[in-house]
Length: 218
Figure 1 (cartoon, helix red, strand yellow):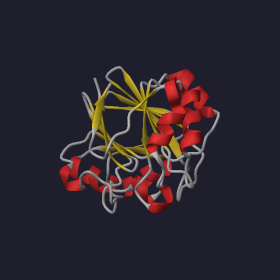
Figure 2 (cartoon, rainbow, N blue to C red):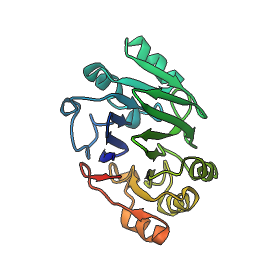
Figure 3 (spheres, helix red, strand yellow):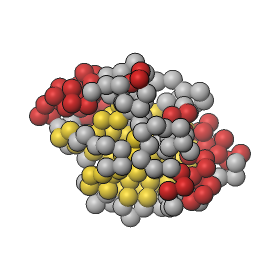
């Protein structure tokens, strides 16, 4: 089993045989359910792209926990310059760290360095898709067909990412079993309604609306 906790915005904590942090934007996040000092242990810190609200506290958490940074090559290079343990990668690739597989998939979005991406985390027989920041793309059909995600974290904030309607279409493409909406409600420009998203998804998947700090188990 894997316990998945939404920490607010796009930050996610996965706990199973290993501990994985994804996009740990905690400092400066008004909806963060914890602060970096509350994170005592991590094996991997995974970053989808080089924007402040996703890179967040990644470098500091790698320093404090000894976790390996897994990210796009350009982000990994920055981590190496800080003497962190890193695994750089790119879209289409897979790396394995401590028995956890990280698959990097396409995302439609900008980045300050490198390219934006989504990730599929494979741990303890479960597959979790974190879309990062993205618009709707037909590549999601391939992600669904190839990885069959047990759980997906999809942005619904609109303006900078998919909104509720396009994220609901993404659920159709992915054929995911469960989905958690993220990247909304943090700041006024991304104040979308998760209930609207849930209504649009209908019976295609189980939509789990979490509050920051809440968890589900797969």
